[in-house]
Image 1 (cartoon, rainbow, N blue to C red):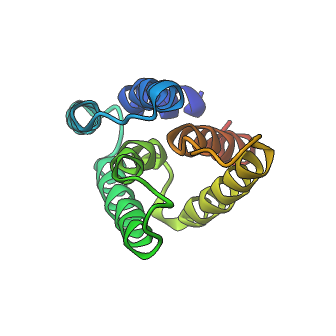
Image 2 (image 1 turned 135 degrees about the horizontal axis):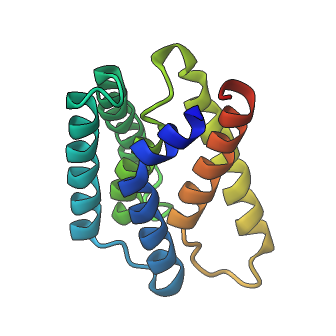
Length: 158
């Protein structure tokens, strides 16, 4: 039953991430407004769930911490490899990292696993493209997060 609470606690970013991934795949555009709305709604949602005792306050704290760390790393990579990542990929990371909010700090290695899965998915998508065209990275962020969280749920949640 814990997996249900895990899913419900990150529902705004689950839906928002899907919207961002579809839009990036179709038109290669990540709306900063959509990202901001997703993050603010997720913060409000986790605050309400924590205030009413549905989740622990540590879930909100973990979500904010994971988001700041992952977005910071993505921003660093954006500056190192100019042209490899767009700024929309950096902002979308803040939505995707919130999906890991219910993962406790003691299980932070799941974020590292996510980055490895993300790298594998990105490498595969780049290798399979037909010609030298841009690759939508937000769907890779989203799918790799879902793969990693599914693996986490299968190994940790009842």
